[in-house]
Length: 380
Picture 1 (cartoon, helix red, strand yellow):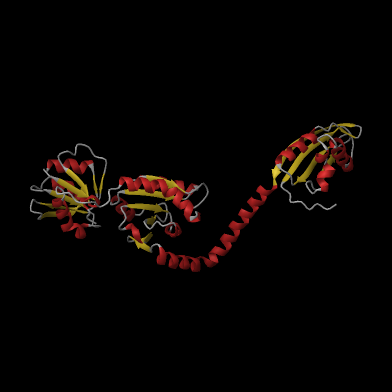
Picture 2 (cartoon, helix red, strand yellow):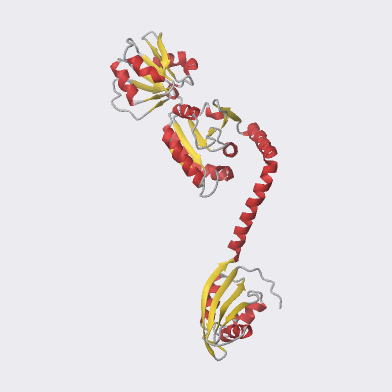
């Protein structure tokens, strides 16, 4: 009768017979010598009747006085039944009058192969049709996201894609491309900046230097690993995150994005000091920083103030240490950058009371100098 079951497994066996036999002899031995061996419900005739076993395929090769070949049983049972039937066939020791030996070669999951074919075909379809619709689809996504959870903007002289929240957020997520930013917007994250290739743009370094925490969230492929290595060589990365193996960030569901970022987000919220109630002791610092913040921010410069909050100098950060070695009367040093150990040491020698910047690196022996960030003082 025709086989109507859905094939789940292919049970593949090989055999050797010490004599010349035909295909029908092999099939007869498989049916005859397993009949009743495993119970009536496990007879191959019964399994075929209920569409649990399909048509048995046999291929033979003959020599002068021996026969060898393979046999394949398509089955729609569970894998335990497949294993039991395979073991029963392996017990066959005669085909007609000749000694024989059967051996299991494999139990292949047909569904797994079908899934691979489906995924392969889906990738072909995506590659073919995405090139035709990417412009329209990209525009639609942009419209949706900009109207709901944030805007896609541009940053720096090379116009790197970013979400609009990178300017105000105390932390930033570095991703590989614009599609990643759109996907993060879907998940509710509007503080992402696209690297756009393995070469790290100078503007990325500058922006990261102003953030309390920097997160790298890259694709789960080999290229993502190379980009992460390059990124770490030029930017201080606080958290390294990857999409699932073989998956790109743009392909993750919003829920999966949230799951990957969850622990890091909670950790960052605990570590970053949000703008708070300013103490009496900090009020002079707030006054000094607020006076010049708008003109100083995003300039990569530093300003020295005297005890009356009057400006003594304004120089690029690259020239700051040389300036400190010759300038006197500095009370507050305010800079558009990171407070480093080297800068702290130079400030001590100049008798500076307080340094204010975007971030504070790991420093020691800072007892004589007050170190503050703009965020701590509520100045943004």
